[in-house]
Length: 484
Image (cartoon, rainbow, N blue to C red; front, side):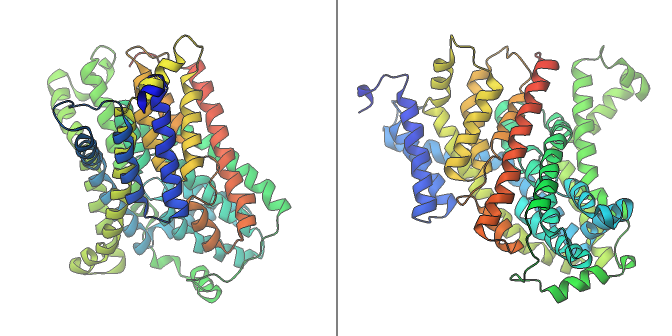
C-alpha cells in the first residue's frame, strides 16, 4: 500500500491513522488510555516503511519489540521523578502544608483579593503536583472561600485552573515537560526556571479572563460528591496554629527547584570557566570550585533533588500529624499506586511519539518544511495543538510532538531549543474539551454543567495557550540564544 503514496507523504498517513485510532479507542470504545496508546504505537510501527533494526527481523515483530523498548526508555527517564513528586504531593496535602501556603497568601492579599491569593499560591503549589490532584486539593479551599464570601465561586475555581494548567505543561516534574526536555536536549534546570518565569504571563492572562468571566457568568455553589458544604465550613474554621509553619510548608517545593537550578549553573560553569570566573572566585578558587561543583551536580540531579525534597516532605508529614514513621510510609502507598498508572500511560505516550519518529513523521515534516519560511515555534505549537484537540491528553500531545519536531532542530537552530519546549507545552494545553479527563475533573468536581465548563475552563485553557505562544514568539525574536 505504501508505494501508492509518495514516500514523503506516507508518514503523514501513518500519523493520521495512528491519531485517529487513539481518538476512536478512547472516546468511542472507552478503552483505557494505556492500551489505546500502546495499540496506536504498534500501528505506527506496522505501517512504517522501515524501522531501525531491519531487515534482521520481521517487520511486524520489529514494530512490537521496538515499541516495548521505547516504552521502557521513556519509563526509565520519568518513573522515579513521577513517583517522588507523588510522595511530595501527598505530604503537602496530608500535613496541611498546602492549606498553610494558601492561608498565608490570603492573609497577604486580604479576603477582598481572595481570588488573586488562590491564583498566586496555586501557581507555587502546582509546580510539583499533578493537575488532577492539585485541583482536588485546592477546590475545597475555593468552595470554602465562596461559602464565606457568598460570591465569586467561578473566579476562585478558574484561579486554580489558570495556575495549574500552565505548570502542568511547562514545569518538571510533570511528565510532559520532563519527557520534552529529554527529547529536545533541554537542560532540566533551565527548563524549570524558564517554565516558571515564562508561564506566569500566560497564566495571568487566564486569570484576567477569569475575572471577566466572573462578571458575566453566575455559577452557584452547588453540593457535589465528596466534601459537603457543612464540611467546607469546618475548613474555614480550622485553627491555623494546627498547621506547619509557612517556611517548612514551602520547603519541599522550593528545595528541589533550587538544587536542580544550582546544578545546572555549576554544570555550565564547568564547561565555560571563563564566563563563570566570578562563580569560581566565589567558591575560593579552581580546586574548591571543582569539589563544590561535583557535589552540587550530584545533589542537583533531578532524581537526587526529589529524593531530598521527598525526605523533607515526609518529615513535615510526620511532625505535623505526629505520626509514627510506619504510618507515614503506609500513607504514601496508595498515591504510589496511582503514580504507577500515570507512569504507564506516560510511558505508552512516549512510545507512541517515538514510534511516530521511527516511522519518519519528523523527517517528513522537515522535508515538507524545507525551502519554506516556516517558523519552528509556530509549527511546534500548531502540531501539539492539533494532537491535543484530537485525542485530549496534553501529556500525550507534548510527548508525541517533541519526538516529531526534534529532527527539525538540526545542528544550528535559529533559537534555543527552550523555545520549542515552550511552544509545545503551550500548544498541548489548548482547548480542553470532552475528550480530556481534565475537562471532567474540573466540571464534575466543581458542580458545573458541561455547557458551563466549556464556557469557562475550555476558554481559560485556550487563552493560556494562545498567550503562551505570543510570549514564546516574542522571546525567540528578542532573545534567541541560538547557540546551545
